Length: 255
Length: 190
Image 1 (cartoon, each protein chain N blue to C red):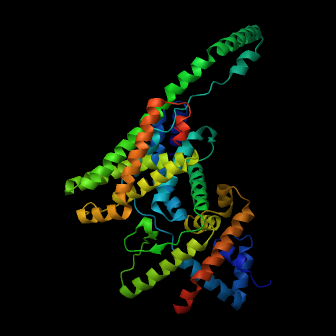
Image 2 (cartoon, one colour):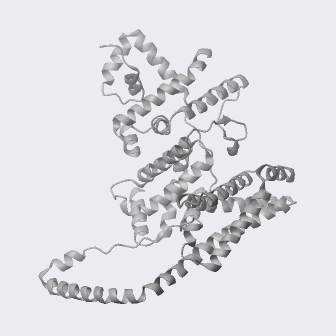
């Protein structure tokens, strides 16, 4: 047997070699390969698995709460319809159904042409306020959070601000991702800056001093961010009042 | 437990959205752990966890009843993490710090050794290891994490990353070679 390649040795280390017995035998007989393998084993043994940081007991629940408002309810699919119609006694019923569907389709087309302008406007009106209200609410809370951060002057207010940052963080992540996906980089960038502040505050220790918070505010320019959030919020409010059909896309958030 | 999970999935698919919460609670830490190992960042790992469970819910109809939910959601999460790493090119340089500060790209590494000299050596090795891991491409890092840290076979890695088994094997080889090159100076001094 020729000398073993590094690839063969790596496969052998991970117990995935198809010629395991042959390799074992070769390693016993060939000092060079045995030495190379010993070095490889030492190197790989030294690479410890990366330890992931511990999560709080309610982590899973927090994850679920952060996504549950964004998932629709699954509807069970109707099955077995074809089997019902394939029976001879169902054939006449199927013919009647087909006829009925054709008539309904034709009538529907006529009715749709008549109603289209009214329906489009109505469905846009129905959807946009929900999206805008949710987003407006998030920006409103973020604004209050930044104001509280600026004016907080007690340990109690620090704890409240920290809790609020943790609460806002997951929603903000989803809005930012959504804004990015729908091609609104300016909006996504503002939410990204907001997220940095939220992450910092949420990860501060419980007993963080006022001086530390003031230092963070300075570092992260939270005053500038507060202004930015106010501008975005007024933009959302304007959109809410006007409700033009393209409002959802221009805000860069799809729900 | 598997049967129980299948009945939860049936419940979710028949309209009981809240039942999905039990699956999220059960698997969130395992998903966070692999996401953290691939991304090397807590905030990114949290993003991956949310995205994976969100996608999992939306794609739940395509879940096959003979599969295990843990394996299925794990695959989704690994791909989310890989996509995120690919988006973050070029790799950020990470530093090892006593108190991790994610905005400064610092990471904390666990170190159970108490002896000061060993502590120093161990910290040096881990710092090298963290830097060496950042030298790998996203696919190499992911394949290596799955093979070396998560104990997945080449076949499983290939299935998870939707690549050929030989490509998965090559990714692990390349990762091992690069890591050994980066860690070689430490071997000399040890």
